[in-house]
Length: 291
Length: 335
Image 1 (spheres, rainbow over the protein chains, first blue to last red):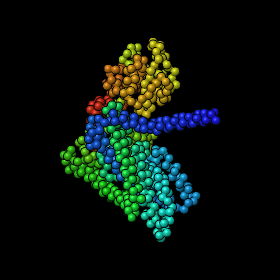
Image 2: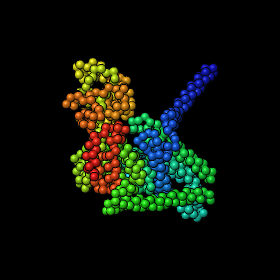
Image 3: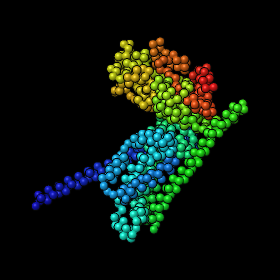
Image 4: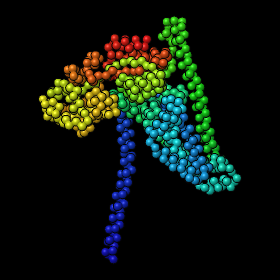
């Protein structure tokens, strides 16, 4: 009896220790990401906070670090978002609704599904090459805002479709059945019953995809968004630049002051990203209450 | 009910956004066109009436420039200053590299190509086939300086062959004695700009015969010129190379090595770079202007402005200005 009890106690102690060790391991795993992010933010704040002045937002880039700003880059990024958001929302959510609600499940839809999942993982530079060939050359849109925004739309579409599909799929089938039972058509069901409850998830997906897009540089470098742009685009066919390209340009300059400018550019980009993610959370909470 | 409204609201909102954007852009595109229209018309009128008040003409339009990242600072400076006088002329500048620039240039997509080397035969053929005629303008010189630590007292000069021997890929040189018998048997510490930089490309071409640089533990690479300056100045047996302007800024920390390209050792200086005796480590930087674009008054004005003012701006961004008479000769090409 005694022996049995001792063995049992040891076993329990062993289990507890394993549990404790794993606990530590998981905490470490979690904190690596947080620590890296904190280190990055602190480092950038130290470098860039002194340059975070009105000049940064009101001035165009200059060869002199003092008085150099990122007005054109900031405006370029916002314009691109404004074009990209509605276009990718309509096409992305439209495709998701079709695939989930209208399309018959079969070999063809499975093929499309596979394609979309694959596209979501394609490196962004590839979209740049596609954009260059399709929008810049073939459609002769030139190195314009619209060409850049459409290229970025291609980049985020698969992500939006996949996340919107997941949100739609999460709507219980009983909701649709109830709607159909009342004699509603497919579109009535989708627009009045399914989408409202899927919307928080859809919107979160869209906004997160947007925030990925504003940080992308590679596709825009590929289609030739320009490095020195000292004017604001007047229309969608004008040349433009965006924040990540401006930051890259500043980093490649030899003078130390430009490094500080680059850091402050990164701060602005981070703030923009946080704002977008924050609004995603707000939207989700707002609509979730309605459901 | 609420749910239904919110979804439709968002759908409507995004559709309206698309419409507004399309409409706004349509208007602007028209505005842009009329602008360029007046710009091209106005000077023709002036020329016809022989109006001397040419300066008064308000220029507008867009001059697209792309090409070498080495020439970029020059064009950026020129564009920035030009914009102060002609705020309505837009000069977007890209950095696709010299080759990428020529590709667009010969397709007629851009007005001016920045180039850190003269146009190649096949590029010239491509331009000719596409019917693009151009004017070549030399805008400044770029000099590369080979530097060692201030404490280094045994190097008086290096030949191109010796530099090649030190830096070339697969090199077995480990100590200074391997370079020249009179040098001490101390290990060489090498510093080089990274493979992405134009400076490296240029060194690779002029010194290494395009064979590529060695890559072992004796050499450190950095895209940051400041790091290279620190590296070389901090190691007594170190050697490195970078743009001449960088040496000029750090003369107190570094010793520049005269380079013998076959005609005796030449120390880089504004003069030796300017007159071309500091060979092979000095090169001209060029811009190519599309002749058809040159007929547009704003492009012509910009090209003139570039040539007339770049001499003063070159030093500021780290390059060496041409002699004045050469600028005059270049300016004559676009009269």
